[in-house]
Amino acid sequence: MKKILQYLFEHKTLSREKAKEVLVNIGKGVYNEHEVTAFMTVYLMRSITIGELQGFQDALLELCVKVDMNGFEVIDIVGTGGDGKNTFNISTLACFIVAGTGQKVAKHGNYGASSISGASNVMEQLGYKFKNENEKLQTQKRFSELEQLAFRAQMNPHFIFNCLNSIQQYIFSKNELDANRFITDFASLIRQTMDLSVNKVISLEEEIRYLTTYLKLEHTRFEENFDYKISADADINQESVYLPSMFLQPFVENSIRHGIRNLKNKKGVILISFFAKDNLLVCVIEDNGVGRASSKALKTYDNTEHESKGIALIERRIEVLNIEQKEKIRLTVKDGFQNEPDKGTTVVLQVPIYA
Image (cartoon, rainbow, N blue to C red; front, side, top):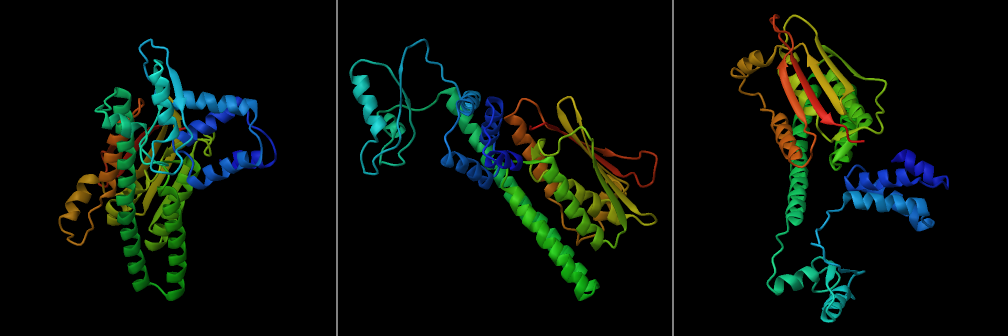
């Protein structure tokens, strides 16, 4: 969105294809509210072009839920809102007048907002119940979106709890200057967490920046007892490829806390890589930690271990996301080195490319 806004602020206009892409992404929640506000501001300052209008129309036709009129020719009535008084809103009243002349009416309506009664209120009062399959699908979609917000809200406190615990341990064992530096970096990470968690999806560039900030903090806290590397194939445009927000950090946290932290005689390594395959973004997280079985056994002797909820929440998010999209998200977790004492863990996450 930053490049698009810069382009528009230079008094340039969008092509029909680009206008469609932007509005589709807005409809899918790709951009945050501040970016959308800035985008709308452009069109308060100048007129929309024919090409842009056509692109926006194409986007609305793609995003809309189509209704089967069963072959009837209908008059479509759309209002601009009520008069702010406790009456029927204007378009609802117009529907009664047109229908009274014998014409069939298709009403774009909702429940009362700018007046006491909208079209939906009137129809329900007359005894009609909305049970169209399209409406059912839309309700299911809204429910899924609410579930996603709830999962992200649950995950953030869990993540912050672990970070605060890290700060506490760090302050007890380090000098004041280093502690203050760590707190500054932590504040930056929390800022990123707050900014990114409100978005349904984020760019790969933002995800990599976020993981880098997190790993830098943990690398410092564990006194550089592990190395890490994040890489992405050069043919991936990190600014225009998107994935669900707050998706990967719990797996990286798991690698550190339950794998690498328990190593005895060697330095830990975490490798994170991204590449595209068959219209999927493949994310691979590898570590050379003790492995899943050894980690589980160690936890039985460690009563102070805080049980990680992040992975369970991610798995539930995947279930919900897979309900509403054709291309499914796939998660695989396996041992990295079958014949080694420290088997390590490899996480492979395949996500449909949100472009």
